[in-house]
Structures are given as C-alpha cells and as structure tokens.
Length: 146
Image 1 (cartoon, rainbow, N blue to C red):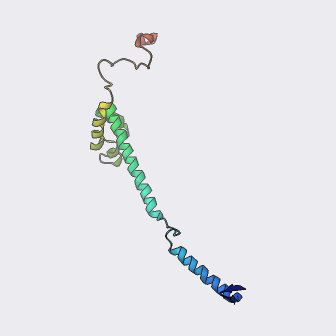
Image 2: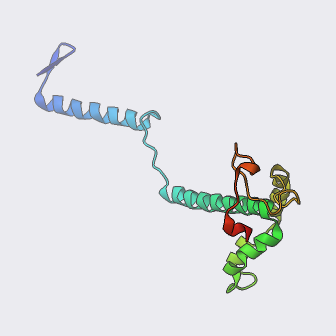
C-alpha cells in the first residue's frame, strides 16, 4: 500500500495511478523536442546521393578533360578519344561527354600557362633527365646510335 497525503492507496488505485503517471510521462517525452525522434526521409536521401554522385562524376570528367587539353592540346585530345568514338553516333551521350566542351576548353586555357611548354624547340628530341643528373652523365646506348 502506498501512503499519499495521509491516506493509503489500495492496489487497484496504485495501479491506476501508475498508469496515469506513465501516460503523462510518455506524453511529455513525446512532446519534448529534445526527445523527439526524427524520421529520415530515405527516398530523399537516396535521390540526393545519386544526384550528388552524378554531379561529382561530371565535374571530375570536365576537370580531367581540361587538364588533358591543357597538356596535350585539342588535336592530340581528339586523336586520343577518336578510337572510343568510332562506333558512336554524332550526338550520342558518350560523344558529348568525351568531346571538348566550352567549359573544359576555358578551364584548359586558364590552366595551360601553369604547365611549361613541352614542345619547345630546345627540348624537342631530348629525353627527360632525372633530377640531380646532367645530360653528360648519361651515356647513350649503342643501339640508339645506329
């Protein structure tokens, strides 16, 4: 038995009181923003992740094309992708994705000054030299001289 304000409660009253008390506590917890569970909208999260992946892939493709265009030039890039585009129609998705577009050509034009000119007359025909080794230290192979 429970004593409340000088009176004792029977087991039945105690059970009813406990049920009411628990109902009030549940209602308070349910209405409290600190304890409220937020349901995730899974469809929206899935759509966001797919869309974000597609956008990231597109940006990466444009940047890769831009750096190849800046390093090699448009003619060399066209020769690189020509074998991949042989069986494709003119306006296909692959042709549009691999072909030079205005964004990648503008980025390539901005990035090109950062790379030194690889086809200058001074470096034409010379092999790249590792750092710390002069050109005179490298002996040519006999097969290369013939």
